[in-house]
Image 1 (tube, rainbow, N blue to C red):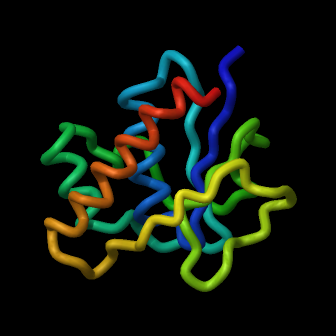
Image 2: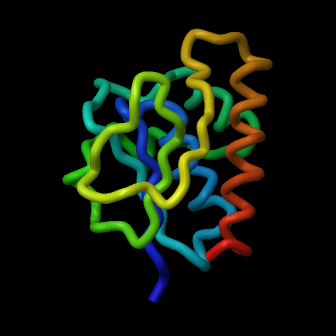
Length: 129
């Protein structure tokens, strides 16, 4: 049985969505990936959608949407994407806090740096768990 990994940030619209997409893309055979937040946005960050499609040919809007933590299965591993104002409470401690800056509103180069950092950390999960 595959372990369930949840990526969590407040709005579940950017970093956590990127991590879910890249997790499914690179390690779908090893883990089940989810993303969630304590609040939602009407849509996934459109810069993230555009860049993930351009870099990996993944259409996040096909299978992903902004959702709250109570709408996903109970995870075996919970990873905070980084909380600038304090991490949301999800009913348990986070296994990891990646401490990533939210690229929302940034230029493409900044966005791509964050995406590549998420890719590196997602791939590392294979050795960690």
